Amino acid sequence: MVKCSTSLWSADLSHLAAEVVRVDPYSERFHLDVADGHYVPNLLFFPDLVRAIRPHTKRPFEVHLMTTDPVAWIEPFSAAGADGFVFCLDTLADPSLAIDAARSLGKFVGISLALSESVASLDPFWDQLDQVTLLGTALGIKGVAMDPALPVKVLQAREHIHKHNARVEVEVDGGIRRTTVPTLVEAGADWIVPGSLMFGEDPYALRVWLDGLDHALRKE
Image (cartoon, rainbow, N blue to C red; front, side, top):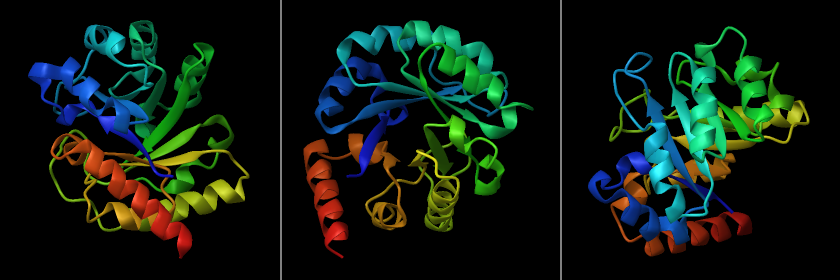
């Protein structure tokens, strides 16, 4: 079954706690983008905000570190209530530093790949990861169309995971729409990161549609 890591960037930020509660039954976890204004030209979520909304859901919090120094942010977000971390491949000369930092705190860990980064670049790390997050749009922006090459990249990720006999899930983030989800799920995505798709329509209806989509694909 395809799982939802719901992006809080698309929630009504003036009523964030209520938004979390509203979509909680239809999400397996929550995705929190963190941007420092340097790595990407934006400013997004911070530890105190995570701490403030933590009591409103028992769902895991996945923190996507779009920052120049991801290791420095792992402990503060962990203390605030994060359950796992995704960091950008090109932010560290040695990605194992962030992997080990997250693991030392008992957190799940993933690496995100930008549109220009190949799946093969993760070959040294498959046995250290819980997931790979494949980005379908440029970092730090929302509301734009998904790159049409993303389903092919999902297939490539599945091939590399199988080749390395790894237990790694594939997440897709960016441009998640009703028109794009079927091809992503068919290609082998385990997780989608719905933003406006979850908050902009009835979340129950969305969940029913996703479950039906899973059922239809399993029958093929």
